[in-house]
Length: 149
Image 1 (cartoon, rainbow, N blue to C red):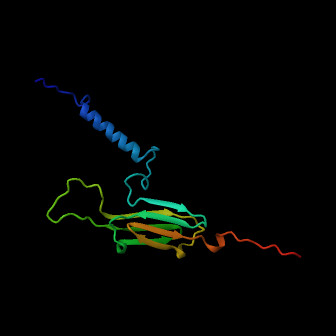
Image 2: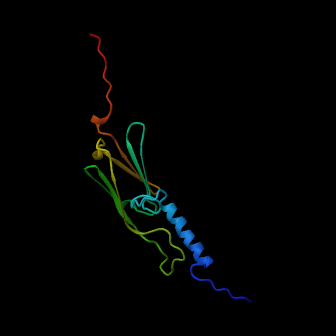
Image 3: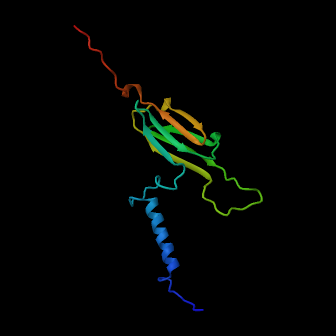
């Protein structure tokens, strides 16, 4: 039986692991920018959209988070959602693989100035937190009736 020794730079296993780390890095940050609050692996993942009436809808994926552990705050134009997710492990067991993070989390967003944050509504259902933030009345378009003179 022949025994092969590779130098660390030519070891096929190290080369494959280096390639895997590089591929992971590219998918985590596809544009090459180091943006700390976006991309794969950020918790909680969020979608922000605007519906036909101009209402902003912000949806957070929060599986395993109890509604009483979620805090929503707004200050000026900044919306912050924070809370904690408890780790659940068997009392006499141990992890073989752990991909779901636990602990404190916080996400903050700058929202447009024409939103009425004081009229925001939050709903939590099946691990999804949905915030609906309407536009201020002054920011909504108004139709002016033409009067015949």
